Length: 157
Image 1 (cartoon, rainbow, N blue to C red):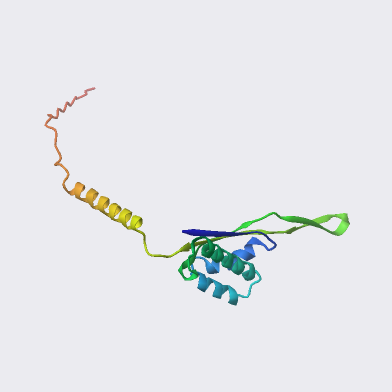
Image 2 (tube, one colour):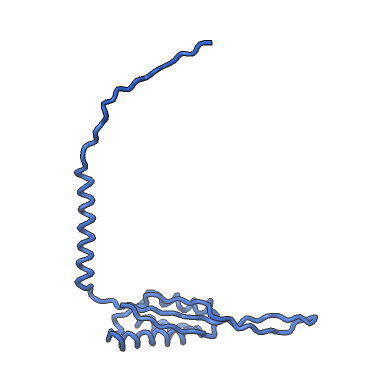
């Protein structure tokens, strides 16, 4: 089961937030929160709160324990950019881009496989063995008995 939480319009550059997001990808939730508490980056606070929000979503919707969750996906996209202008020399204007981010976290539960998954896995293993046996018992190659005719023509000048 997957549980999702998003954070829109985080007033921080996506490049800076990605540094923090890369540190917690594919980690258990407890380890991810510990890492984010000890990382010396400004982006670690909103990312930690977002992960905790996704954990709360998992608890309230399905009753999943936080110990069974891992950070399956975390990605950072650029949000709307605020454009501001600063005066420069000779009456020119210089554009300042104040970037924002959209952060998405997807948690997945690590639990015992269900009966459907086990049955599907057995079925796929069985089909693989059937195809390997079929190649071993393939019919013998039949050769044709046509006579080969060769015609050679000599050209003289």
